[in-house]
Amino acid sequence: MRVLVVDDETLARSIMIEHLSKVPDVEVVGQAANGFEAVKLTEELNPDLIFLDIQMPKLSGFEVLELLAERAPAVIFTTAFDEFALRAFEVHAVDYLLKPVEPARLVAAVERAAERLRNRTPPPSASELSAAARPPGRNLERVLIRHEGRVHVLPLERIDYIEAQDDYLSFASAGKKLRKQQTMSELETQLDGTRFVRIHRSFILNIERLARIDLYGKDSWLAILADGTKLPMSRTGHAKLKELIG
Amino acid sequence: MHPILKHRSRLLLYLAVWVAFGLLLAGVLYFGGKAPAYWSFMFSVPLALLLGLQSLSFWHFVQAMPPGETPVGRMAATWLGAGGVSLAVWLAAAYGWALMLLPEGKTYPPEALGMLPLMIFAGAIGILIAVLGHYLAGAFQRSRTAERMALELQVMAREAELKSLRAQLDPHFLFNSLNSVAALIGNDTAAARQMCFMMAQFFRKSLSLGREQSIALSEEISLVETFLAIEKVRFGDRLRTKFDVAEDVLNVAVPPLMLQPLVENAVHHGVAHLLEGGEVRVTARRRDAFLEIVVENPCDPDRPASRSTGVGLANVRSRVETLCGHRASVDVDAGETNFRVSILLPGDVEKIRATS
Image 1 (cartoon, rainbow over the protein chains, first blue to last red):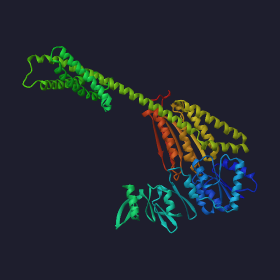
Image 2: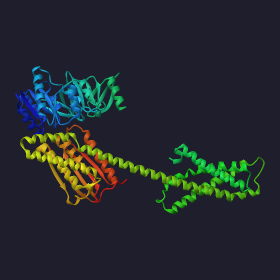
Image 3: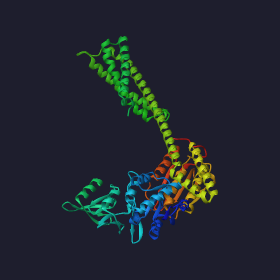
Image 4: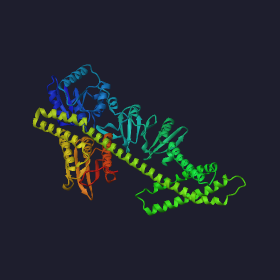
């Protein structure tokens, strides 16, 4: 089995590789020190299994999984301590190891991963997993977008509005538009409803960008943004917005 | 609000005292042969109650002129004025009330005026007692408030201490450090031993320093150095540190475990989110009569907003404020790529004493 080890701490990688060297039928094909490298190496090396640390700079382990999407191989998460992540793993029956790792636990986890590979069990859903791992009362804080081969990390406060286009979402930020494959309703549940409002079937608005509301016709309105952009607003959208901003 | 009007039972007790005063006055009138028993009673008791109600207004003066903080001359003048006005109003009411109590068609007998000196005396005594009573109530209330504030301060300081102790045993730090030790044992036993030693030193020191009310800045700096040395084993080249501590502030008294949470934030919410890492800078120097401590670190503009930094900072802020009061301040400058916390503390070498 070809394995990739991802952890931002050199020592944590070295002990994991040391343990893995004693597990039969396992070959460590690479190691990555951050999420960007992890995504790149996974695509280049095409490993069967990744040991993925959760807390890393720039991209967390969950975000790496999200970016890999259907290209993701089997995953075993590793963490020293993260109560919310552990709960998420339990809920979604995802394998994880606690650092420092006990070698016997590691062998068992590798065997389970091999079993899943034989059965072609699909990897866990990244968005469900990261949603479950979010501490209660906390919403999504940034959006990851792969655009023309590059990974963009878009903090929510930089998003002006989001538009649905076929099965894509288009994120408008400072005049630029970035596209991501996701559904409107899935994104809506992850966002903070007091900051982002679905004003129309195809539009979610960052209410900080709203400059004014114009009446457009009977039962339809236009949201005018600070940069002059005009977005259509439905009756229910208008009611929701009214309720929020009074 | 007036302390007597706040509780019904207090008001009833207060009025009962005035009824007793009225009965006394009635007794003097009757046994002094000035008036018949029924008339004396009907005349004195309502007037005594009136004087009691009038006296409630003295609370305002007691509040405005706390004893010990007001010049004696001003106090005497105010009370002579207030007491005089109150007495005059009361005497006028007494005159009117006496007229109303006279049987129809009768007028005052000439000797009735002989009652005036007695009434002036009674009114003055009543007012004097009321003023003294109000001062007593004021002093009582002030001491109760001071007691409560002292207790509150104590509780707050205690809570902050507990919180910071709990923060010392940060499980993330503990397990990651243990993982580093486990890794080092395989190929660098000397480094593994050194790491165990540093961890023991760090935990021992944070436990003992946490019990103190104030420690020398040099002790806090050495705790922070140990913490950063452990984190450097984990983070390798990504974590760099720079200390710039002036010689003349090493002995200044600071609250214990004040710097450590800030440096921990600088590592976990700053440097740890940067691919290439960064430098944590700790500066301490004298600024006029104050000690200025600055913790600064680079940070990722795209970093997820973190709640625990806020908690750590609020904790430090409340500790500094409870221990040093308004003479201290904590300033946070959260820039796009740089995070900076600066603390100003009184630069005394003696131990910090809680001030309100």
